[in-house]
Length: 323
Image 1 (cartoon, rainbow, N blue to C red):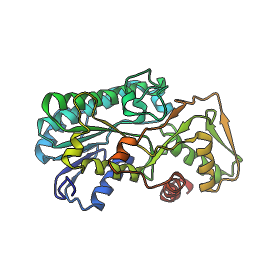
Image 2 (cartoon, rainbow, N blue to C red):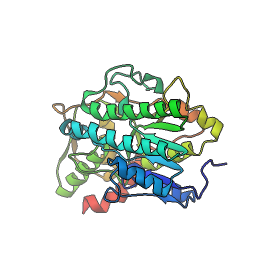
Image 3 (cartoon, rainbow, N blue to C red):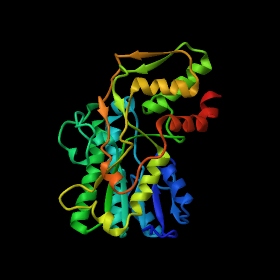
């Protein structure tokens, strides 16, 4: 039996983004009738007083914190102060409001970049804070690590039930395809679509093509998030131990090289030209494969394989990018 009542107020922070929009779709698919959302214009999540007022007025019983300032290597390198400042303010406001108004369960979403650059592969939850971070996204990663620590600290001091879920690299129909701020897969889709439109002979790919990445379709992540929030009380409590952070990985447990990823995008979109790799551009972390044995032990596994997910994403954005 699901833990969350179908009429319980559930606040999804960041509902217009890739992750938040998928979670809203999943909640509605399952019949939840009281999903709370606010746009940035309606509620500035960096404004702690406004966030607290919103929580006091709407009284959410469950919260998914999917709102964050996110971006790829270029964005992280260009705006490091924004990434640490904005993310700290967002999560501080929401976590404190959850505590102040007695939210039952909070799911705080981070990223696999919280783990050390040279972490063991696949990366278990226990490798958090065991080595240096990847420099290109250190400010963002440190903000997310602080959020995990906040969840753990509130649980220990106040008996709250806050869980931190770390998804692997995500993609899907509502992704950011702006080349200045996007992650590797949406950037590849955008570049490849543009090359087809322009009749170009080649697509430029940043880096050597050798780093490996694990990718999870956004609807799969949404299913995992709702699955975790619906865990029976005894199973959920096992994830909130005193001696370890309340942390769980969400991923596929499978990865591909950037070259293989670019080739798959070219195949799905029908690009017949060549891929031109630029080794003068940064590669980022050599490998970021999640150890997903914990969430598998709870009964969840991804459904959408990579090529199928890219195909679904392309079908959703084809009109916008190919027009």
